[in-house]
Image 1 (spheres, rainbow, N blue to C red):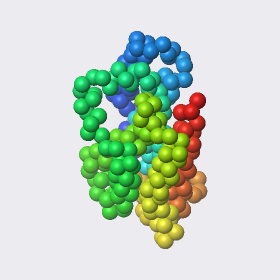
Image 2 (cartoon, one colour; image 1 turned 135 degrees about the vertical axis):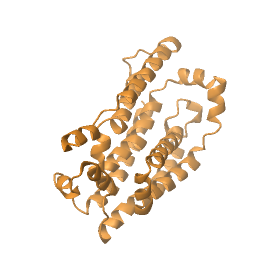
Image 3 (cartoon, rainbow, N blue to C red; image 1 turned 90 degrees about the vertical axis):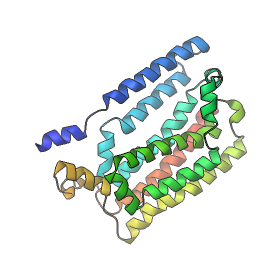
Length: 263
C-alpha cells in the first residue's frame, strides 16, 4: 500500500466518536434548558462543551497519532485527557442537573461501584506508572484491547480523583485546607511515573515504542520521522521533558481548577 495512503489512515478523524459527543452535548443542552435557569452561553455550559471538545481532540483527532512521535507529545495528550478534561466537564455540570440525574435509580446504583477519591488516586498512580514501564508498554501496544481498556480505566479513575475538588454536589467538595492536602498527595503519588521518564533519560534513554509501532505501519525508519521534531523532542532528553511536562500540567490544572471552582 502507498505510504501516503497509510499516513492518511493513521491521521484520520474519529467521526463516530464525534457524533456520539454531539449527542451527549445535545442531551446536556436539553436537560440544562429544562431543569435549570442557566443559559447555554453562560460559563458552566461553555466549560462542558469545551471539555467535550478537548476530549475529542485528545483521542478522536490526529493528535492521537501525532502524540506517538515523542514521549513529550504523548504526555501532553495524557495530561489533557486525565488532568484537564475531567475537571472541566465536572465544573460544567450544574448542581441542580446533577441532583436530578443522581435521583435516577440506575445512576445511583452504578455510582456505588466507584472507588473513593483517595483510593482512586492511588490506583490511578499505580496503573499510570505500570503502563509506562517499557516491558508493560511493549505488551500493551501489541494488544489494542489491553491498551484501550487501560486508557478507559484511567479516565474513569481520573474523574474520581477530581471529584472532591470540583464535584457538582457542593456537599461532596473538600474544604480549602483538605483540597490543598489532597493536591499535595496527588503530586506525590504521580511523582514516580514522572521520575521514571526523567531517570531513564539521565541513564541512557529508551526507545519510543509508540513511534516504533507507528513507523512499522508506515514502513518508514523511525529516525526519518523523529528528526522532523525540534529538539529535545527527538533526543533521549525527550523522556525527561515528558516527565516535567506531566508534573507541570498537573500543577497548572490543580491551580486553575481551584480558581474556576471558587468563581
